[in-house]
Image 1 (cartoon, rainbow, N blue to C red):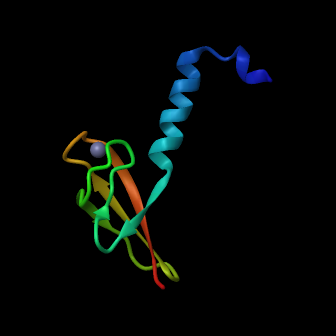
Image 2: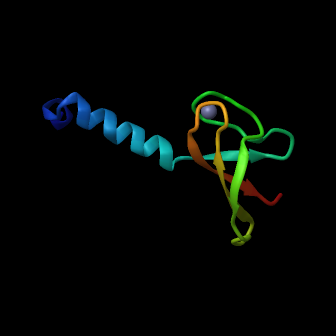
Length: 75
Ligand SMILES: [Zn+2]
């Protein structure tokens, strides 16, 4: 495995980046739930338009300050 040759800082940076880009499911009951600390109904910074049956929202956690994206699927 080549990943062994990367310094730990690089691996951490990659993991943090992929975490930030991962979208969580938007829950009609709990809103956007912070993927880091589990805070429910995080404040919504931006609501995207419906793209097909998917809508994205951008949240900022008021507990840990983490910014993340949620995805709502039309069912
Ligand atoms: Zn949080």
